Length: 436
Ligand code: UDX
Image (cartoon, rainbow, N blue to C red):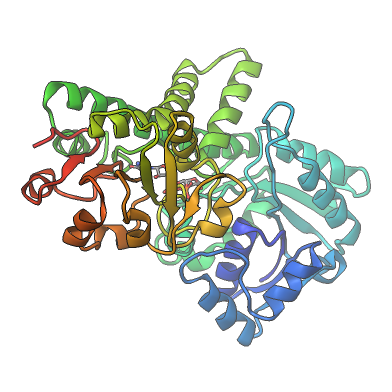
């Protein structure tokens, strides 16, 4: 089938490359000529494991191409995906749909025969209807359908999530559009991936409800971790014990410094707004948003607790800046709040991240940037692990201890075993586990 992908950001590029890998002819369109030039040279603007390879394989095979012109990608396409950004508006933090609306106008002007226009960007409930109204200004209803097809891609595992999803959700109103979407996803459904067809509003809400539910799960285990710390329980055992109940499930029960990223913080806020506007506010999601915001900042208190002294004037090494491992994304990363809170308390902060140093610069100021983890630890009074990069897990702990001026390690990702750390002579503080 022929597919056009409008927007070569994270979602657009991953989806476009993966659709090509499934055998479709894909044209990716972006208004930014520099981005398109880079992509044509085989340069990938984001760090995502496996993406570069999949792009180059499909460009070579002639199934994937890039252009700045909507008029090149859209005519003759069976499905045109809108995967442009929906950044939070500076005034109220809600998704700015300007680019979605502009893309809809561009597609309406360029399409030739019947076209399925697919909202791939995460957009508030009712956007498919809005997009349909925009297209209806210049097109007859028989010429198009608007479909909502939310993505559930995790950064760092996006290719796998795309090619082996738990489900594909397609929100549409006509049989004709459903048939085309079934064709688009046939290579996946042939391998047993379930495809759920709903109405567009339900598909839009599924995306927000899924992310909010996962955020609730994380917020919940973080609170349970706090209870564990005060009662002598071990959150790993509690998470395992509750996760064995198939109604709960074992995933997304890892406590940490609070969730960040481009999706959970934004999508929970959007759901809160949608629910309020509908007259049925979500107290649960509101509480999780607040508890997560407080949690990120409060993580800095753990450093002083572990040191047994104020951090004022101390040199603190922060290992890991991105919101999770295997990404260079800094958006809403707990590290931003933790570094700021440590600085507010008078600490001198030295930071390191394997992939996120450049991306971190606009978010983090007045710190020393270390070339590697060991350089960050050199002469620091305490270290805090914020992101679960495997290179931190693999550190030579004897060397770590030798470099730190005091062997204080605050591990917000539970990378090490408390008993082993104690044997090695560390003052080791982790999340939701009794200190040995
Ligand atoms: C998420 C959703 O998983 C994905 O389906 C959606 O499309 C986009 O948002 P992503 O933001 O890439 O993906 O990361 P994810 O792996 O879900 O982690 C989000 C945050 O939650 C990270 O800060 C992570 O560290 C944290 N997290 C996750 C936990 O603290 N504990 C967990 O058990 C899982």
